[in-house]
Image 1 (cartoon, rainbow over the protein chains, first blue to last red):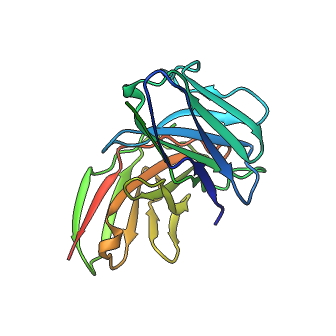
Image 2 (cartoon, chains in turn brown, orange; image 1 turned 90 degrees about the vertical axis):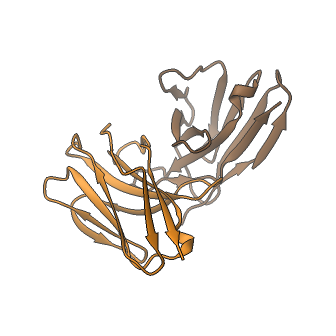
Length: 117
Length: 110
């Protein structure tokens, strides 16, 4: 199956700093990528839809200035958590669908665990 | 997007067949039903997808009745490594945008 890779797998940062998480589709092109966050023992919550070459679409309640998303190429989307605070600590997961139509299968990254001190 | 309802948790023993049912009463005509598996601290992994009737692959079967208001994921002969959270998702095949429900935590015991 197709591979989606996230980097870093885990990151610890100080409160007030910004953290960037990368999501790459390694062997296919992805016009659309999705970013989720997941708190312990909870389900995944969709944060935003990342569209190559255009602005991301954010879900209701997600601050677009807090969570900056850039999808500059067909294989890379980045999520930047700006001015991170302890409440931003979470597991962030990206997913991607192949360019040319959604086949019904989304490919997920391994996830990135953010801890803000 | 159609909302899904699943049991929060299920227990089973090694070697047994496990059936997890998901309700999606408001499923739209062009919605597909997809099941994912998630282990702790990992991204979800695709298990199976269907539109109607029955679908079978090497790891599971998916049963969908004619009205499509529910679906059942069947895992044959589970092992300890099948302990995970299983998510049922319903969505259109156009965008890939899927909303996760609560999922079912399956605990397989020896």
